[in-house]
Image 1 (cartoon, helix red, strand yellow):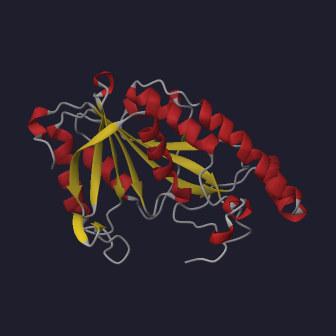
Image 2 (cartoon, rainbow, N blue to C red):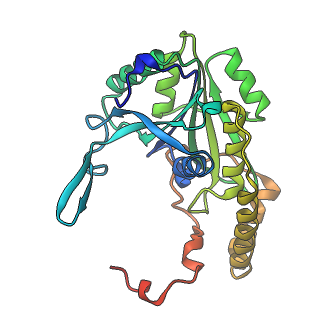
Image 3 (tube, helix red, strand yellow):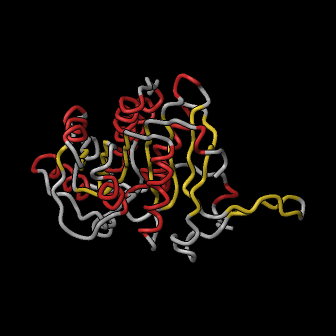
Length: 284
C-alpha cells in the first residue's frame, strides 16, 4: 500500500482486469482513455505476484545508464483523480489473478471495506458475432440496485453457464455485503483485433454516469469515423468477407463463449494497413 487506507473514504470503484476475460484489449483501451481525460495518481497497490502467471507477467524494472532505478512486482494498481471534485471514485487496473483466487479476493475485499466503498463496477469483454458498428453490452448484478443500473445503461441481462471469470468471483464475494456491484461485459466483434472506438465511447459514457463525471468524448467520435472508413475500405477489397459480416447485421447471432478467441474466419488488424516508416519494415 502507498497511503494509509484508514485515512481514505472512497465510495465508488471501477475495476478493469487484463487477461482471459479481456477480448480486444478492452480493459487497457478504456483505462488509457480515463487517464487521458482525467489526471490521476496511484494511491495503493495490491500485490498479486503470488496469483498471476509468472511466465507471462514478470516483475517490471527500469534501468537507466546501467543503474537499476525501479523494480515493481505485479500488482492491482488503484488510481485516484487529482481533481478534488472527483475523488469519490478510484480506478483499478491490473492483470487478473491466475491462481489463489481466495487470497486475492480476501485482500481485495479488505481494501474495499477499508475505504468504505459501496458502489463497484467491473468491466470485462468477450468476442461476439456482431456487426462492427453494433454496440452490445451485457451485465450481471447481485442485487436490485445493480439490476437497475443495467436497465438504465440499456444492457442485456447476461445468460451464461460455464467456467467463471474472476469478475464473477468478486461479485460472489461481495454478495450480501453493503455493496452494490455490477459486472459489465462489452461485446467485441470477433473479426476485429482490437476494441473499436464506438464501443469504448459507450463504455466511457457508462463509467462517467457511474462516477459522476461528464467526459468530452468528441475525440473518440472522430477516431471512430476514421476507423469506419478504414474498415469499409478493407471490406471493399474482400467481397467474401464483406458478405459474411453484413450477414451478421441482417440475421444476428449468438455471442461467442467468454474464453473464445478470433480463431475462425479472417481477423481484421487495421494496423497492417497503416503506413510505416521504412526502418520499421524489418522487426528488431
